[in-house]
Length: 172
Image (cartoon, rainbow, N blue to C red; front, side, top):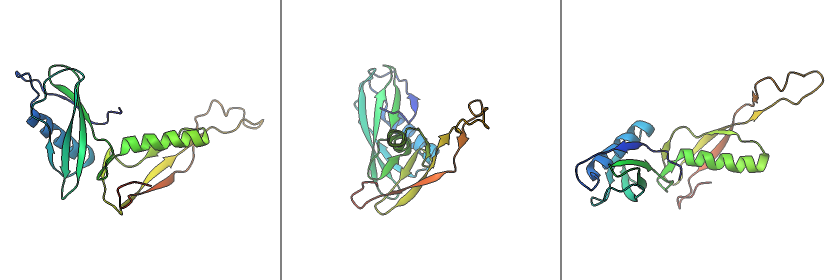
């Protein structure tokens, strides 16, 4: 699992996690990291503190749209990490960028830099946006260019990948 969220230490005297603190921390972090207007986060209230235990919370965006948050406990003292997987209303852009990089590396043999503009993006059917693709190339070695291998790789001009959100929530 790619963890793009945050680590939150929520030590408490009780043997269960403080769901209110987890919810507040996730809501605050999403607002800071992605500038998202999050209406609410809802986590189960009866989660026992135990290292490695995972659970899901649900989130609501302003003005509408739901998403899931995967939370994993890092220890038995209330430290958790969270991540928002891609959903039909909220995209995890780091995951999307990594997927593009993997496909492009497989197809073209080089790993480009892909930047979709942040950590998360709220979407709705019909939306579209662009991700910037930058490939790094090393100049070919020639008799007139003997220093090519010692020079830094050249960055090609950026290209764009246009992302479209389909009516059923899939992206193309």
